[in-house]
Length: 66
Image (tube, rainbow, N blue to C red):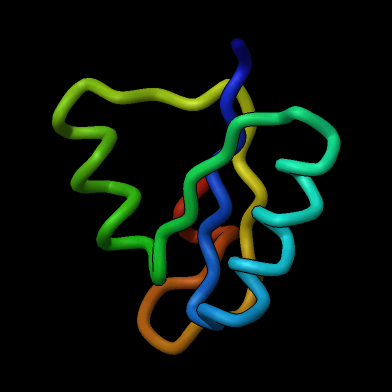
């Protein structure tokens, strides 16, 4: 099954997106910021798709992509 990672500093928004994806039978996981997602990547985990918040306090979504 394909997995989508939601990377957003807004937990309420992340949960809402995750709920909508679950209703579509799409597996997802959310991370409350880039640092958590990077940690998961360094552990060897990878998603099929990222959904990124572009504007976050420490590191934005575009910086994460670079």
